Length: 100
Image (cartoon, rainbow, N blue to C red):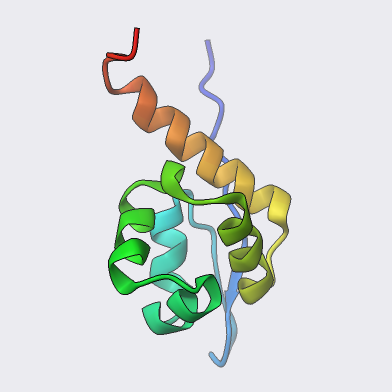
């Protein structure tokens, strides 16, 4: 059985010459190359602590936060949602389900 590659989102780092294109496969990787934490915190209207939580646990992001992040970064919402969905699924698959 072949392994399906994890989705990525192409992000062009602004103000670099030549422009650097990143293909992060997790929300944390995307946030690392996205620019300053301050910019994202302001766009989301959350505290730095909440930003750190979102970075560690993408399943805690709201739909509105992800939509705003896509707008700020100039990436397709569908690609961003696919990355976060895959990361959240992978983290849930690695943990026992104790909600039964």
